[in-house]
Length: 133
Image (cartoon, rainbow, N blue to C red; front, side):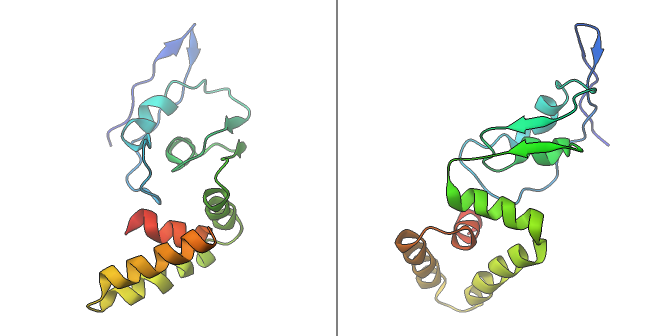
């Protein structure tokens, strides 16, 4: 397993974190490629992790702390993460419902339909699909 090294910050041990293999959201500026390195710089005795700009959740997902608070100003994005915490099967269903329509020959039309729906009323379910399609 390829893990980040265990650096010392002022003599304090930090996390050893394996690279995260998959991502839920494709997000502009996400830190997926560097999340394990960033997480490895955090002190191992950290009690609570605070993530003010959650975005794709790369660092939070890689770190997987026992206790954390995360937020983002984009309501549909926050909706995805809150629903994932409350009921992952619902999030899977959101994506599966939209993804199942892509098995037809009208992939562009389906994408455009979901995008129009999102633009009329931004929501987590459509954003999830759009970020991955």
